[in-house]
Structure formats: C-alpha cells, structure tokens
Image (cartoon, rainbow, N blue to C red; front, side, top):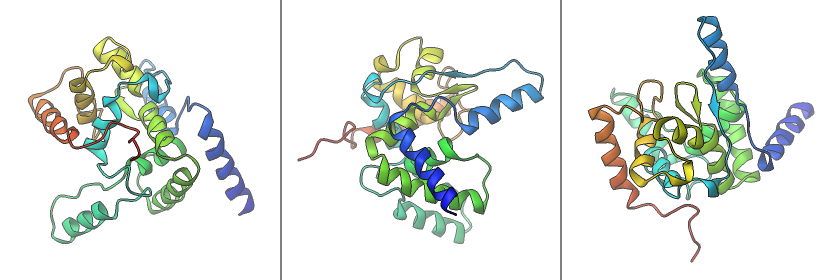
Length: 217
C-alpha cells in the first residue's frame, strides 16, 4: 500500500514539471495499428500552454467542462444531470471533467471499469492538489487524442490546419473542440455539416468563458 501511494504521488509530482511525451492511450493505439498490419501513426509535439492560442483552452472548456475553473475536479452538477438522465431512460452522456480526462489520459487506460473509475477519481484528486488548473489544462491540451494518430494541440494544428498551435484562430479552436467526443469519428480537417453546427454552438458558448488562466479580481 505504501509502495502504491508513494509511486503514484511521485509520478504526479514528476509530471507537475516534466512534459508528458507518451501516454497509455498512445501505446495502445500504436499496438492496435501494428496488430492490424498498419503503418504506425503517432503525431505528438509537446508545447507549453503559452505557445498555444489563447482560444484553445476556452474552446475545450466551452465544449467539455464549462465549470473547470470553479470545481475541484468533479462537477457534481453534471454528475447529477447524468444520473437523472440515466434514471429517466434518456441517452446516456458522460459527465467527466477536464481534470478527470487528464488523469485518465496520463495515468490510466481507456476501457471503462469500476477499477479504472476508482483510480481515475484518485488521480483526479492528486492532480488537482499538486498541479493546479493551469498545469492540468496544459497537460490536457498536449495529451488528448485529436485525430487518428494525432495527440495534442500542436500536432493537430500542424496536421489539420498547416500552422502552429499559437496561431490557431477562434474558429479553428472551436472546430478542434467539436471533435473531442470522438476524434476518430469526427474530423477537424474535413468537417461535416454536423461538425460545423457544433463549431458554431461552441463559439457561442465561448463568449461566456474567460480567457484562460482567468485573471483574479
């Protein structure tokens, strides 16, 4: 037990300062490509948060977690909404925050299970305590899957828009954020009419979210 807590806390502390160059999902996707006899596809370029467009954090908050700056890793308002929808028989939707997604992406595996959800909660608490919001957002935007073999804002900016992440426009960022529910199904390079509709909705929500990190009064 001491080894578990010691090693996990140490890993979180290391990633507080060190770039995350590889994640379990990247390894799993590469293994899947090899098993299918496909050419390896892995585009990932770590850049600091201040080397990304100021609209990129705003777009993902508008799309994925509008209370990111206010909660402590768990959005209980969204959790309650999800439970109510499940009880009423409506289509199930996820209620994971950006913090939870970051914990899963960096330390765990994608397949859902009670064990993984428990560990995800544990790592979410750790990164909220030891990293803070700015670092969580930086790691999230560098590690999240944004296309087939594409991870992070810099890689998707280069592969889909032919530019650096810092030069992404507001519409570019909204379109990238629109793919995040399923970046292997939806593309920011060749968006469908549905994706363009999502992009417009996200841009509308972005008007109500402060540029990140939020300035203190």
